[in-house]
Image (cartoon, rainbow, N blue to C red):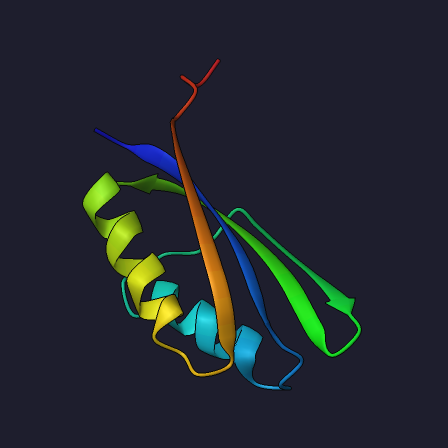
Length: 85
């Protein structure tokens, strides 16, 4: 079943952390629909929306994100994709 996965990530404001996060999608030939980054003092907040993934794939990507030293938290929300009109 295809889902849209929404990741909410908090990480230190390391210049390379966003690229490292996006690399987990590139390794699977995925291109996110949306990526939003906001600086929050010494941290950044990153929201990534990825359609067309299974719950298993979304969970694996979230775990890989959590393994990065610069990442302090990752929240994952999976929801059913809307049918195309």
